[in-house]
Image (tube, rainbow, N blue to C red):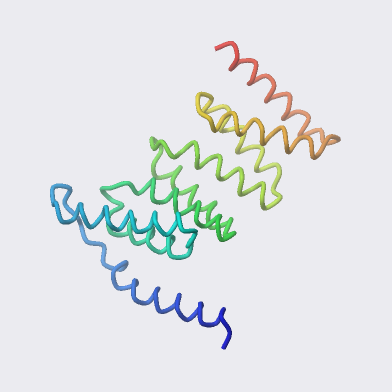
Length: 186
């Protein structure tokens, strides 16, 4: 039995031990000191795993956090960190779905611009160049006052340079140039 087999067995055992807790979504009252402390500990545990680059464990803990406390606490932030962890283990399609979920469910979240940008990067990694550029364009249009706008412009320029003969990417670069001029006037 190899190391990978042992790791798989360990992950299954861990999943099975967490499953009973994730299936029971108990309501936590915001004025409950104990519940608040439990939420903070759960979130810190997930962040610690992420910082240690133990992404699989971090994903499990962020999911558990969202299941137990997401209805009244920082679910958007937890989902964003979970998407980053999914990218860390190269699960780009799952990360993409998580970013989409943040954008759809938490429209006013400060994590929405970063989620749009993350989507663009996932498409880029999957070699879906047009989708990537379209997402980065959305970031430039919608979130021009954020650092994600500048990063998106750089990403678009990088992609368009890869396809110098493409009419689509030439048009896209012209759109970006116009948007940049507008932004500089503001």
